[in-house]
Length: 434
Image (cartoon, rainbow, N blue to C red):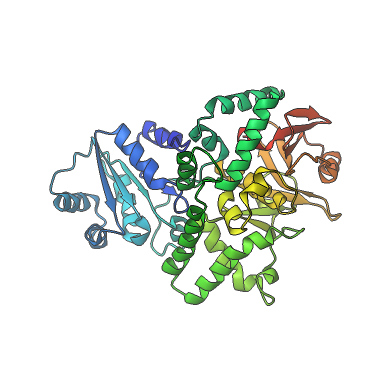
């Protein structure tokens, strides 16, 4: 399946590959697949090493961080010389070796033209808790996410529809009714399947029939995430807290006020007790965090209220699975309150997949804007999310009147339109907003 992340890999290749490339992302999002595909298609020779599975390879880095000695030992391990000029080396599951990460500094500083790519599970956690001297400035880090809706359209053979959506977004002209309905149906299927490559592949193999889709794939991935918490967190007490937070997120999103509340995890829950657990989950890329920005001024990040935030799961399909929502309820567009939470999680996932941080705004008078984005061309843009056709926007109207942005955005199931300085954008076109 085509991944847009390939563009970043090609950019790294075209800029000379001097810095080793480290890919960070949650487990099961397709890191190994896309890196292997890239390596095989773009280089004469390719070597793959899994540090978790091979004690011998891992021990090479435990014994030395000198690049020349490492290559000599790797040659001895595989039984042949490595042509540095023609070979790309892919090191997987690097989270198990801190020395490997340190060694990247010396590969970068060498006069030899090494081509190194690497990835690992919970690599973001490893970086945040790195005990040695992290090679800042010596490596290139790229963040990878589950497949977004644009990639889902391409994977399901709807690239022509994708192109039409982009065309209508640019001109803010309506999609033909039949195309609009088809795109809405695909969007609803995406809410069920999500963007985990294994799930998308199963959906395609079953002729895109949502009733034949194997939902166990998503519950298995969730179980795998929980197993990782138990495997990579040394303290059993910390593991329990991390698991509690993760499993509690669907319930947090069910509240009318979706701001995260520690006492909603347990009655005696406090920031001091659970803050590190949230940090771990955010660093693992298993969850997304949306901070309240106290001032609508740039840069939004410096004005965040660290005590006011919302948490989402990294994949909307996993949220649907954990919430035990029946696919027919989504596909038949039945009315249920939790639909708003699923939609908001989807928007958060789409925005994050573009590499954007998540921020929201709220007033002292119960008005709230779900997301705000900054554009160099247009300034700070408010975004309101609606799960259906009801587009009554008290909060958005209040924001528009007070801050007077260049325009506002409302995502809903309605077709494209522009009225009262508000862009109406269908939920299937979120990927167009950059």
